Amino acid sequence: MKVSVCIPTFNQASYIEQTIKSCTQQTLKPFEIIVSNDCSTDNTSEVLNRLSREISILKVINQPGNRGMVPNTDAVLRAASGDYIVKLDSDDYLASTYIEKLSGLLDIHSTAGYAHGAVQEIDGKGEFKKQRILARKTGFYDSSKALRNAIYGYQVAANIIMFRRNALEKVGFITAKTNFAEDFYLSAQLAAANYGNVYFSEILSFYRVWEDDGKVRQRRKLAEIIALRKVFEEVIEPAFKKRNWGMENLYASKANFACNQADCLGWKLYTRPEKDELAEELAKLSSAPRVRLYMKMYLNQFGGIIKAGKKVITAPKLILKTAYFFYTSRLRSLKS
Image 1 (cartoon, rainbow, N blue to C red):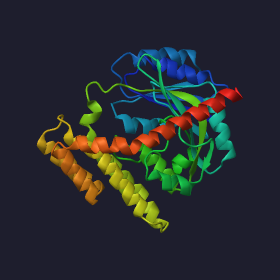
Image 2: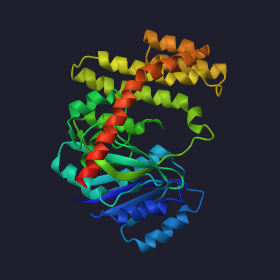
Image 3: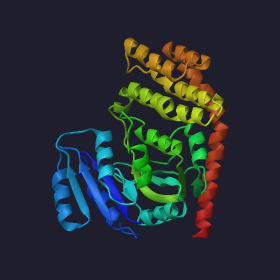
Image 4: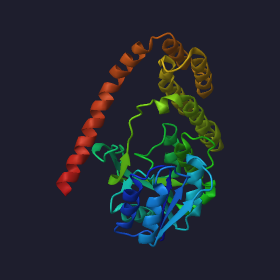
């Protein structure tokens, strides 16, 4: 099987060389590495030009105009010709066995639309932070299980994914029309199209996490809520109805998402008209009574009561999760 690595980029000159070289240092080499440069304004082009002279399998696409994150990602995935396609952001990088381990799992599980693994978080300086390891063993989830789990959110450690090309082709690559939750949207589409997924529980990649010092992400909360609603309305709910599955758990999950997102109504970042607009979108996501209650409490500055209650409820879950991670880490160290 041929493997393509696809890297969309914009203004990541400081990191993209490490990203690309992590692909060339694989124990199982990729067939091609494709980078789509979305009109970067830093010296990304110079770095890519130099690397393309050094690395024969590196192909660079220079977009004629800035397309934006989602269209640029869609374009680079469509340009790949491999049987398996790795989507890798240009500030992240791969462990040397990433392609070997995940392509091997896709070879075994022919109905898996994608493979993913645990990740190590890193900061802007490359220092290790926490590990992201899902509470599941290495192995396969069939499409039904993947779709049922989709109501709880995007079920990967981080968006460093190896896709089966024909699965992407079947769902039309990236069809989400938003700049948020497009990865969640795609994974739900693949499950709805009868593709499962396979997970490897060891660290296979390194995912860079940025501090939101300028509160940029917070300022985009409206777009995030709309995108989340569209995943449910356009993908998950129709798939459940097509299968004649009960909707109770799905509606409960939508309410949970709305309640969790409702804390933005208490942020000083937003004006009252902006909060009213956010509240309107939250009500579209879920109109459950507890969602309306949460919105009223946050709007009237009683969010502290909700947060205190959440801490009491989530404390036992946090203890169990910590114990699980300690146990699995201990097992891995004993095996090694």
